[in-house]
Structure formats: structure tokens, C-alpha cells
Image (cartoon, rainbow, N blue to C red; front, side, top):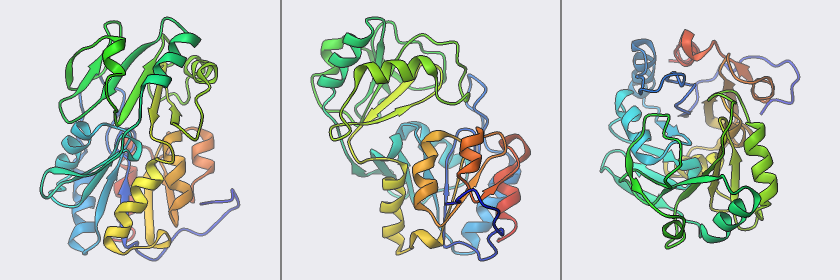
Length: 281
């Protein structure tokens, strides 16, 4: 990871490439799912043709990660989803690793902090189960409505708490969500909390992050962090920026995300991933 001092661009091709999805290989500004451009797909194909594995590392749930992985032409390898809480083997089309968290205490503390909070939960590959008022203003698989009591009935790989917000998607950490997270005050020893945009808070197992998911995939391939290059655009990518030997931020990323990277690529709308990968492959 960069220490914010000027540095030379990496010249040595990596042995593992890890890609975030939304805001990195696809546009996140539309309600309907978008697909990677031909330039990005071709660049990913060139990496794989060179014998270098490409991994997906995303905050999306598994069903959303698999959809875009297939659009990228990835029919083998691994997709780390839900901020590292689950991992999907693309070649056999089944989970290869899963972790879970007890949602009960988190739900109780969020409700105590703000009675208007709504929830969605990820139990499996079926889609989001959600409380009645959860705002479904993005494209996803919706598995059905549940009560708050249902949410706490069994462990989950991921819980989402959400409050009303005027902070748009992709705008960085939402101040409304940040206040809710501070009010809930979940213990780091029990939960990993990611404050997102548009009133969104992700809650997962402790010690689990994009970095832990990526590290597990790198172990499969016998690749060190020094030989791994990662691409991302958001605050939830910072853990893997720190873990990887070389981090590339997208041009439209927030200033603090760009500052944490070793290189800033053109934006997602300018095929930044493709333009950087072409330097090596």
C-alpha cells in the first residue's frame, strides 16, 4: 500500500489479479445491472490467457457476484463475496467457504439507536430477505419479506441495516449510516461493520473483510500478497489495498481511497481496469 509518497508504477506482471465489481468493472449509477465493457472483458481474458488467475472480491452477495463474474468470462476460480464472509467456486458452482454471525444483538442495538432502521439479511443463494420497510431501490434477488423476529432466528453471513438518507450510492460513507453505526456501538470482537453510502451498513463476522477473503484465495494459488494486484474504488476496498502488494484505485474514487493506492487508474467509465491491465498483459 502507498504511504502517499510518489512512487513508480509497477512494471512486473502480478501473479494474481483481484477485482472489485461495482465502480471498478461495472457502473454503479443505474438501478438495472450493467455489464462490463468489451475492453474490460478482453483485458481480463488476456490476463487468464497468460496463466494468471483473476479473482472477484466484492461486497455484493454471492448471487450478484456470480452474475458479473460470468459476464467477465470467469468460468473457473473464486469469487469472494459479502465482504469476505462467503466464497464461491465458479468452476463447480457451489460455496467453498462460508462464515456466519449471530444477528440478534446487532438487530437489537440498531433498533435501540434508531427505531426507523430496516434490515435485509443474507442466508444463502436465494436472495435478500428483508423487513417490510427496507428500501428496495437497487437491482437484486429478493427472496421475501421477514419480521425482525425472523432476522434473529438463525445465523447469517451478512446483515444489512439501513436508514433513510439523501447520500447517493457511490458517494462515500453516508453520515446518516455513520451516526447509526456509532449509536449501535457493536463490539469489534463480535462484528465487522462497514458503513456504506445511501444509509447502508453492512454487518458481518469479526475479522472478516475483503482482505481476509482475498488472502484465502491467494493461499489456494500459492501467491503472496506482494505478487497480488487489486483494483477497487470504495472504502470497503481499503483492507485489501493494505494487504496486497500493489493497489489500483479507480479515478472516480473518493480522495482518501485514491490516496491509499499505489496507482490511480482512469475511471470506471473510461475502462480504467483495462487500461492498467494492458500494461502487463
